[in-house]
Image 1 (cartoon, rainbow, N blue to C red):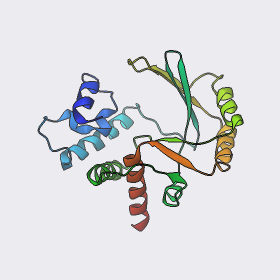
Image 2: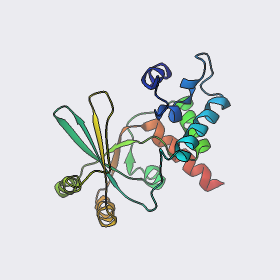
Image 3: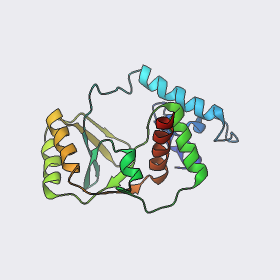
Image 4: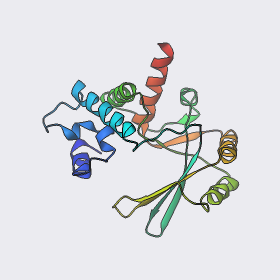
Length: 199
């Protein structure tokens, strides 16, 4: 989303996560979106979301199953973490160039917020049993479900430790991932990881 689109989408909704990832929406239109004021605002919004309990941190590493339903169309995904080492070693494949200014902006917001707040959409050539196991998980009671008001229903399932380990082990058999959407976010996360290792 550009800033204008984000302003429109988040209008009247103080709980919109756009307050964290596009904080300039809460400042005058002529505000420089790369000013320190913008980054401070986003950092404070994330802090408020955490302190109010809107965001909670898992006590242990887990995998989530994510479903989007748009009318009759349903798609599932696996929510988890990837490694900057896999990105650096080209096990996560890119197909777009990034714009330096946009990449620098996302790098700065991740570093200043001390959070990777925006997901990246990766795809992979999986095996049939991976899909079947996702379907098994989604038969249980969901962790959360919300209708986002744009004819899309988002549902999450929290995997057990054993299920999480299964998916983790399954991905060891998948040789590569592909960035479907989020080249700037992926590169920015890599940049922050490398900077922090150097520090």
